[in-house]
Image (tube, rainbow, N blue to C red; front, side, top):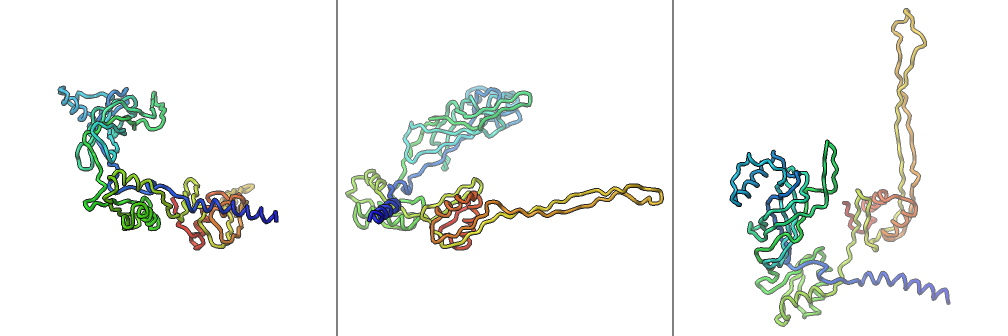
Length: 372
């Protein structure tokens, strides 16, 4: 009886984690976003000054023209031929505009050299306008750069760390045009977009919303889209959207095995099944070696003037079998069990990847195989 009780307790311990995994829930906000709520890219073109001779060379005509334009706006008129400083670099400035921003808010910007500057460390970005896709100015960027690298060279010797031609200006851009995302369409509906399209997950989200706010509030329009009506008694859009994002939903399990042959990485769900299969994986190496040897006669006389040295090629074939050949027989099991068994037989990761690819081709791997 004691043995039976221990066995039952062991089964319960092994079953609880699986049930916990199946019942795991996440907030809706982790599964996607509302349609219309997104960031927007900003880009600008400017110059960085204050470099210690590491900026663009005189051969860069764009830099001379850009500096001449800046000086002319400041009341100084110079020709491009009179500009020969290497303390200036032409850069592209990029930033991400939040979905909701007010005038005066500050955002970070990234500054990248587009000329032949060796480094922009220690420079200062002059006032640069940042435009959106509609060619309207949304922010102004200016400030000292923070560069996580350096480059020094002297007498044909050079020392470099990271990328000294790219830097950031923390809080360097000021919003000049307010932005307010519109998430409700003219029909008074919200649309929730799933990051990973799946009909089961979309239906779970719709069911959770209907249980909370009433039948018919949400409906599944597609595998990646759930349409939601805003009830009149929702207490306002912000409270309604926050309530939806806080709902707990069980996402559908994704049966997928991801392998990266460059790094030898394998990521798979613990419940990805494989059919009963026998696997034999061996390593056969064949090498062909050719040796050229010379045959030299012992003597030559005038009677045999055509006698000379002779080159003979000898070929040897070597066959070497691998030391970590594997033979595995498994019943219906999971990918995790297979990988664990192969690791126990000292099979390296790259050979495991080859086995998984062969299993998929044989129809024994019941999951999507993604090779990166």
